[in-house]
Image (cartoon, rainbow, N blue to C red; front, side):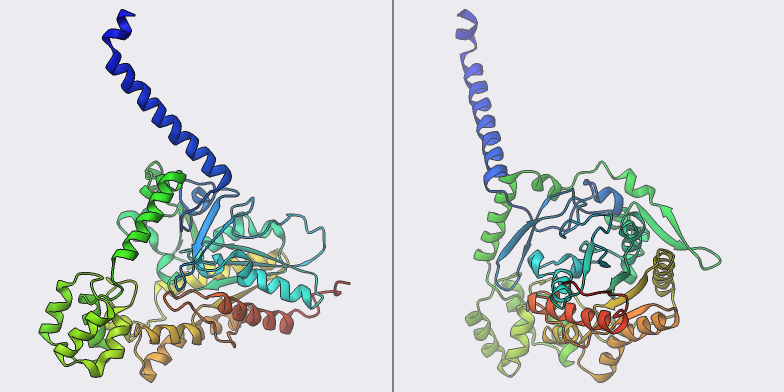
Length: 445
């Protein structure tokens, strides 16, 4: 009795602490069982697939994506292999014509529910036509061509696909060279591919990845707690609610100049900067336009000021796509990676095809936000990326999926929306029916 009397305050504090921890633990368990939520993410390195490819998911991990225009979120679980796809058997027991698609955020489905992914839509359309076709999808946001090749070798070829599609984006050229970057980007992948003196692509281990493997990111910690994730979601909603939707900082000043060739009045720049990153309502912006005599430029300025990534500055070179050197090491490595993938697929009895993200819908989206010049020379440069890919494919017995249907994007995000995913599926459907009608085999009853 004497001990408890002498330490009553400490015991009470300990009891309170244990009660709080028990309550938090119970809340975590109940939320996990009855109402789990996920963060918007493309995966982490401290996961099963993360340690294979640089970032990814654990089997059956819950994922969340958000429509940037409506704010509607979608949640689903990845499959047993950690891919945002349905389950697939390694053995092709149904003797289906198998199509394996590897890509980045467009294939992952960055803003759409899983059932709306172009891979799922494509399989449904082919099955409705009576063809026994199975689509297998492997993709993560931010992937480069090197990661697609790695996934093809580690897992994709085990399914013995008849057709493999590599979804290519222009940023693959830089993503394949992450290993050269200083800081966190240089440590993101456990491997890298490099051309040797004979022009052959060789895989190397990225020691920097493994040296930093024990470092746990803030997002990873939050993603492991239902309570912390909910706190983060509330924080994000408060930020949106408390912040007015229009901003005009240095990035917007630069963008206005690139689009018009004119400099904004100094009083407008000074007033807009005082408002901060997201300091304008539309009425406030209109008042400032009236005051500065800029109402004739209202549509352009409102568009620029409503761009969600307020700090992203565009250079003149990027705006006019002037840096279009196709005879450089980035293109050499990209084509070497694709060439190795094609050789592996052919050895397995299949064929490789490419599909590019550069198409009319994406170009129109860039023009809407004034992220690219509207002059004919820049437009021609934009499509040269596709031309270069197509020429390489034709010269190397690799298929090329033409984007004959415009791919619609979300207004406030460049990724294909639900309608855009349907268009992607229809573009691939046309390619498959035109090139593999004999190999598709007998139709299903």
